[in-house]
Amino acid sequence: MPKFSANLSFFYLDRPLIDRFAAAAASGFKGVEFLLPYGESVADIQKALADNNLEMALFNSPSGDWDGGERGLGVVMGRDDEFTAAIAKAIEYATAVKLPRVNVLAGIDTSGGSFEQATGRLVERLRYAADEFAKHNMTMLLEHINPFDMPGYFVSTPNQAIDVLDRVGRDNAKLQYDVYHAQRMSGELVGFMHKHFSRIGHVQIADNPKRNQPGTGEINYKFVLDELDRLGYDGWVGLEYKPDPDADGSLGWIKAMGYSL
Image (cartoon, rainbow, N blue to C red; front, side, top):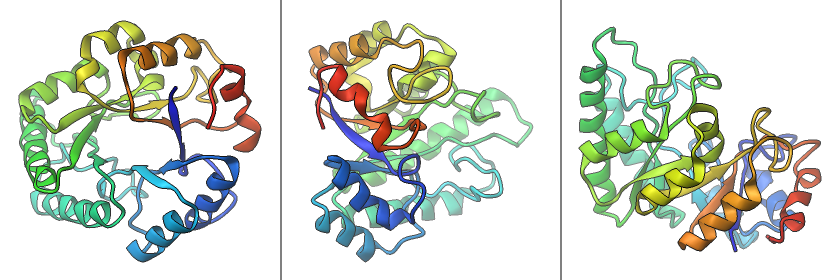
């Protein structure tokens, strides 16, 4: 049976981030994830998790000037020191909240150099991140994001992410497999899962084309999630979708498909 985490960057947006933990617990969730924790104190996040009996499932390492349009530092030229500091900050927060995995966003390449040069830069930084995470028994994740939602994002397909991870060559470097982004770029969802199951470290879902909850679009999520279960996936499945009409009102598909929170 899949275990679902609420993505607080998409759910309960009518309240401050720290208050969304209680809302998730009230809905029945046991795990939460979100983009970036760094605007909150470690102590406040720890308290919100403990008070609501929640587990932290995922967050990203610091990703540059998000409000200014940056979407990660992995591939961005000339930001080595900032990347190093970002990994240290991610480890600080992750160890405090007992999070065993962190997503490191590749970002947008603005260097004007070749694709191979940019890939080499990303690989070297991810090797550094994976090695630092390994010191704390943590997994480094790499996500693929489609260019329709995030124009210019460097790693856009699941296969490209696997190619990068192959070059990184670290056992604790895994794929953050986002089914929605995969469907938009390549499809072949279950075939990919079978071929690369051992490489998948976290899963996120939304339906296509509107990125709402499962059952609102073209993806047969009952088939996909049951197959993920049969493969033996025991990690979190992050609900990274735009809930319609709202968070609680979007959750009916879980019971309808035979699952539970």
